[in-house]
Length: 349
Image (cartoon, rainbow, N blue to C red; front, side, top):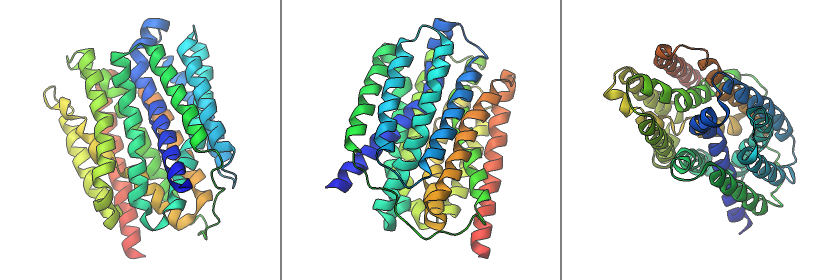
């Protein structure tokens, strides 16, 4: 029974991670209207990254309790603060706390499920990460229909419920692990993946507006993108678990095709389908690293993910709008090449 409670607590933790990742793209119109921000949004990503780095470092140890439930409580307080703050510099300061909680929740929320169900690690990590996609879907959808403050207060309440479910979560299991040899390609692949996921969610909406599509449509398509991301994890979990790296390589070919279509006004509306194909990437790479290298290596994996998910979207803020789709294409191509390299290494080994 405790395993079920911890599974659903992890589900809520990853739901909140999805909300935090989707928040900049979904709240950008609100922040522009309330605070008059433009390029200053980059500071949000930098503060988030600094918090993430610290959170991941704290999560590398063997203690899961009370760090994991405390992280959810901290995120709940930070979300309430973001709802109430009158200035964008305070939003940036709270982004550090959101990043800190996100780092702890992402490492332990995933690793706990992987330890509870080691024989079905790839499949169940993809399934529990459906929560991430649902959180990312919920954020722009809710901010379109409900007041900004109400959405963030509800999210804070969910964080405290998750903290209660995860109270007393078991400490990190001792598992045999390889040394760091062979880990760096996984780290680079995860950094590129999280950068692509975040940049596509945050900046493709700006590109759609440049193509002449209205702002509300961009919000709907962003919600669909995160919904398809969750559906990809749900429906592709079992097929990907059979031959993980070969399956990921095939999915990335489809992502490349969709990002080529993103250059044209009519077919750019298909970009949410890229979420479906990208869905299993992170969870599958996480499962492979956990099985091969053990818990401590997950810190490096999340460092790479944190760096990619914050710095790459921040750098996109410096691109001229016509360069956005080409930057996305370049990231997708780099990721395809990295996964192909990992597959070749696995076959050779």
